Amino acid sequence: MLRPRIVYLAALAVAAIVFVGTNEPPALAFLALLALLPAACKLAGVAAARGMTVELGLPTSCRVGQPLFLAVGVGRRGPSAPQRIELEVTFRNVMLGEEERVRVVLEGASRGGRFELPLDTAACGRVEVSAAEVLSFDPLGLWRERMACPFSGSYTVYPALVDLSVPFERAPQARFAGSSYDRHRKGQDMSETFDIREYRPSDPLAAIHWKLSSKMDKLMVREASHPSNYDVLVLVDLGRRLPNGERPPADVLAAALGLAASVSYDLCRQSLGHNVAVASEGELVDAMVDSPASFDSALDLLVSVPLPLSFGQAAQLFDAYRRECSFTKTVLVTTMVDHVALGVMGRLTDLSVLLVEAGGAESVEDAEAFRITRIPVDALEERVRSVSI
Image 1: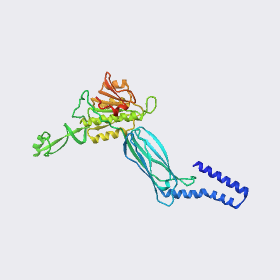
Image 2: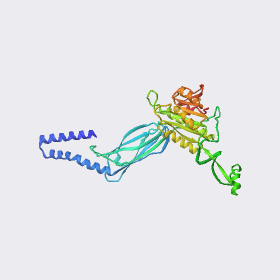
Image 3: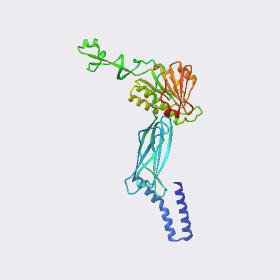
Image 4: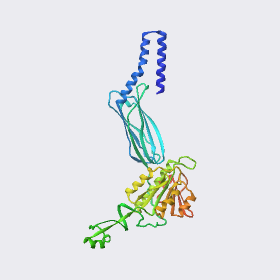
């Protein structure tokens, strides 16, 4: 907008010099026309802004690397419309804690229509989107007017899942009984009663409460409770910065999240209930997975929780978390290894470490208290089909 104003002021100065030098009526008329031009452009810009509408549309989700677009719809509701519209959009990745402002110029907006802005899907996470500013310009670009565009939404970039087989090297000491229970769901733990109700033809005979039935003179069934804790834990330990202060590669983070989700999905497919936990802001946030619906919730958790600044938080918080939820088998998915911290974890639980790296070769090494499986990013989707834990 500065350049048109400089051109206008230069033209006005030239017209003034010509008028002073010639003192002719045409020169005076031209000078007066130039003097009134900004006011005319201002009125035209206000009218054009009021005669235009801008609407944004956003898809809800995609897979990492998949093309995704922010739809910008421009509509006319009056005889005049701005020639150019500038749109500033704010993007904030909740998981990575990063914010970016993108300014887009819509040329030829006076004709209306639909524009598409490509979105960044290289990094996983839930991205909050809002229209920070929408400006319309008069035909000469001397003035700009703010346009109303109250938009806020979000889209989620999910990691790519891999069809993995996850066999156990040592079976976890799984149990059907729990130490805490879901108050809203029945389950299979007969040691804790969820509800007492009348018998139905499809109920197993073992569920009949014979003593109570004899008192009630009708068959009564005791429903079992659903444990809300399990003995298998998938623990994700990631960070927003490397030890040198740089941001970790987006493909490594996406691969680590995809590996954790793939392990959880195969455990669910094997009907092995487990918990998925990730470090966030000084605590471990977890979700129980025992069905496709609960897996979807856990996947949303992985890409929506703000990651800590540096890796290693999950290992530091594990001991206190383990005391509340007794896990006998832990699968740690990470991008960096601290042998001292992992040695402490390995003495508290049966620990398997899945280390996702940018390069290198696939390998398995046994330490004193844990096992490390190294998986390069490029091998995860192409060659890895089974990960033993």
